[in-house]
Length: 109
Length: 113
Picture: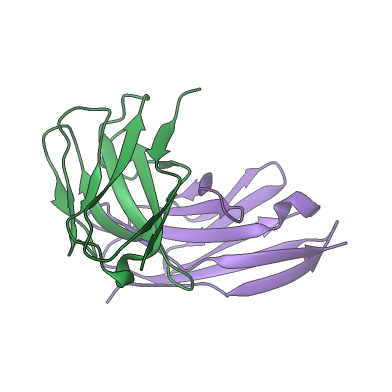
């Protein structure tokens, strides 16, 4: 079966760095997405990786290793507004998105 | 502001009743999707439409139906609601059905008693 694994919850301190991991087993691979979802709101797109390596976008970076079925989202200089759930999703061979359950990130002052 | 509008925002429904969740987008996106989100689970695809006039079944289609009469609208109907359909429902769209970025609506919280 297809599966996306990510930690349920993480806690970090304001101003620090946090890495949220995502491992996947899917039938085929057409890219990996990270979305941010604040409580009670809709998911919003953060990043997309289809080739191995690091994609940097401001304070957020996303890394992909296709051979290991592994990605991480790196958040630097954490701010209180970064408190949210972070969703990992993989596009499979049929371009259907398989979603992880999300990682709830709690930022403490 | 371009985006997706969902209605209602929230609804409490008696079991056995029929309910339609509305979804309208103004971005001229070809593909549209309905997901449900439940605590501890990832987003699960209910139905999708790759283009106007076509629909397909997702991971959890039972008890739900959709239609796509035009590009903008993609309503989701629960013919006879059951308590297990209590969830938050998100409508989303993308430019095409490939590996594209999804834009989500604000969600509809449905409680079936």
